[in-house]
Length: 236
Ligand code: PXP
Image 1 (tube, helix red, strand yellow):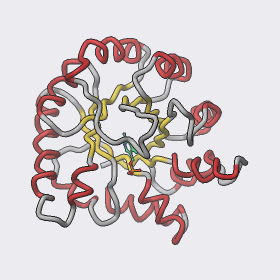
Image 2 (tube, protein in one colour; image 1 turned 90 degrees about the vertical axis):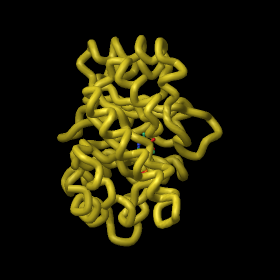
Image 3 (cartoon, protein in one colour; image 1 turned 45 degrees about the vertical axis):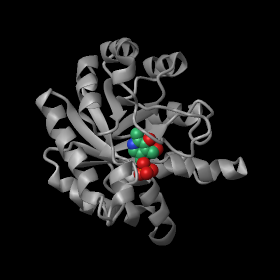
Image 4 (cartoon, protein in one colour; image 1 turned 60 degrees about the horizontal axis):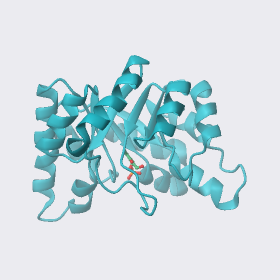
C-alpha cells in the first residue's frame, strides 16, 4: 500500500499565528523524503488551513503527486482544472464541521457528481470520491466514471478496540471488494493511526492510505521524518 500524507494540520499551526511557520512546503518535502508517495491537502471553502498559495506552490515543488481534496463546487472545479493536480478527492464540506464528518452522498446526487467528474477526467486528473463504505455509495461511485473511491475509515477508527470494530471493518472490506469488482481502485483514510492501521492489510488490494492527524501529532514528539518513516513501515 502507498502512503499519502495529509499536511493540513501543518497549515493549521502556521495560521494560528498568521505567519509563515511551520512552512507547509518544507513539511511536504520532508514527508516525501521519508516515504510519502503523495501529499494531500484539503483546500476548504473557508481556507481555514491550506491556502491557494500553498496549492499553487506545491504543484511545482512536489516530487511525488499532489492529491487535492475539495468540495463539489464550481470554484474548486475551476481551480483544479487550472492547476491540474495528479488527483482530486471529492469530499462533502460543511462550514461548521471540525473535519470531514461523513462521506460524500454520491447516490443522492448522481447526475451532479457525474457531470462534475467528467471535465476533471477529460483534463487528465484522476478522480476519487470520498464515500462511506456502503453498497449503495460504491455502486453509485462506479456509475459516475470516477476511477477511485476513498473509503471513509472514521467509523472503523472510532470503534477500533470495541465490540463494534469487526462490523465496521467488514463494511470496509466488503465495500472494497465490491468496488474493485466494478473496476474502481480503492483508497482509504480518516482517523487511521499507528494502532489501527494494520488491519488495512486484511483488505485486498488497497491502493493508498491518506493519513494526516496521527502523523502530525506523533511528529511533535519524534519529529516529522521519524513519524512518517514509522507509518510508512506499518503501511508498506
Ligand atoms: N482523507 C480524507 C478525504 C480526509 O478528509 C481526511 C481528513 O482531512 C483524511 C483522509 C485524513 O484524515 P486524518 O487526518 O484523520 O488522518
